[in-house]
Image 1 (cartoon, rainbow, N blue to C red):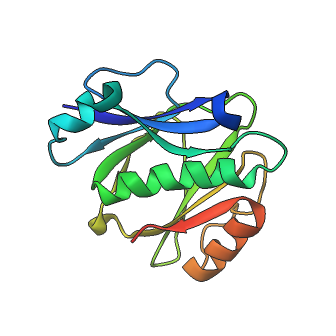
Image 2 (image 1 turned 180 degrees about the vertical axis):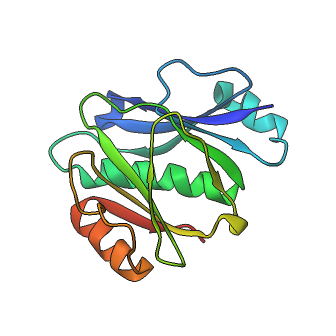
Length: 158
């Protein structure tokens, strides 16, 4: 079954791509396996690659974090099993999810997370990996979003 992979390139001022493939993509930062079959055109158009966002490298890290958050949102929109595979060496990230019931969940590398309507997750937050902003276990989703935006990026999933 085909999965979507998040890849990064320094070209175009730094860009994130979604790469659809039936085999693992070398150097991918994250992946999601949709619950429904992927349309064949997604695998064939441009070899399965489409640009998610560009201009994410450089001094301002916010676009980089927003790119990560956009990929996690895509995983949610596809009712997927999401896996954080690795960091971009230049900018390690901390990935967090907040549930409507206020539970804050840290996404650990190589530990798949169900991102579906039934999972209860409502917001993704992406911050620098050593930033302690989300180090508590409970937080209102609105506060989680504000803190995520202040320290990196946050995006509502639905």
